[in-house]
Length: 174
Length: 174
DNA sequence: GGATATTGCTCAGTATGCTGACTATCAGTA
DNA sequence: TACTGATAGTCAGCATACTGAGCAATATCC
Image 1 (cartoon, rainbow over the protein chains, first blue to last red):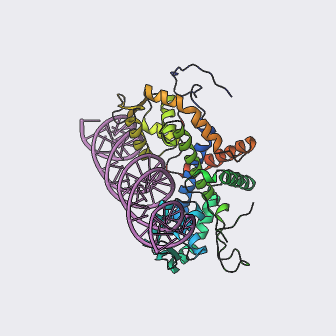
Image 2 (cartoon, rainbow over the protein chains, first blue to last red):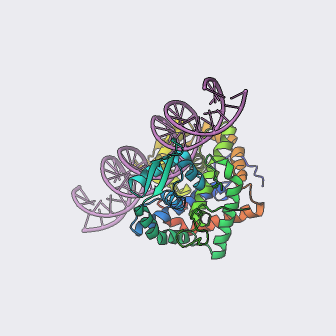
Image 3 (spheres, each protein chain N blue to C red):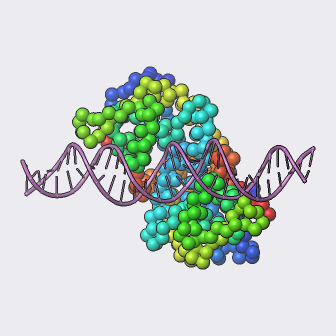
């Protein structure tokens, strides 16, 4: 698609541009930002309505700690594709809320071993319905089939781009 | 393709689901975050390689100012679905870089009229190839048809969820 | 064993995004 | 005109995310 047009700023701001670049709605980057924006808002609303104060990021971290007791911060960051500098603050807040514990590792004195607390376990259990509801709400405009297809395409694009961000996904080695 | 679930560390792999929530890869919210994470990294890398220092957010704001000369901040925020408190800082930085101007409006003394500068126009023109390249790179794992389908589904989900975030899209009224 | 490289974590700084509050201004109405 | 409500913008505060730097501890190589 080519667009050769003279650089005239049109007097009517209400009509769409042709001398401008593509419309925002044709930019996957812009759509990614919008979808993420809505997804976070829906998550916070559903979880908040359920009486909890946990962000999507904190939820993912806590669930991963529960599933992998004693793991260190770098491994945790790799499993959920967070930057290692971000995970520090996230864990700070989980610890401060009493949902997780951070202990010095005996094997490697640089590392911290992470554990979920009973309170964290309780929170995870009680919060799950709200989290699942949020996942449904953020896809409410799509049929079940479309929702599946969206997730498939996102997974595929993410897999291909995994190494392009500073915090790629790193799977657990056996 | 194998997928080692991050929630598999439970000692008994025979009961994969009862005490664990869904895998992250089945959560549209998590996929949204990952895709957005990669999209931003790709944008910054492509634009940076081209010799410019502009974020995706700043780019969208600048392009929208160019297309709608003299618009105010609230209208701009609505057109690109930014929160009004976010746009203040974004414009601060565009102004500080000499790419845009913020003037008091004569019609409404509360409002600020925004204009792109010549420098901003030059920057936009020169940056466009990098921006378009970034959009291609972030979809590099998908066929052209799949990329189109992903964008279609994102648009549909976003439209349905538009009002769920604090900063919904507000189109220009004629 | 000792120099070197790497790794785990933290911190300072910057840029989104949001909540909630506040000021200044405008618009509608009694 | 005075009152009331809505609106435009900013600010403080918090939570992601990232860059780049630094420290301490571990691994590796000679």
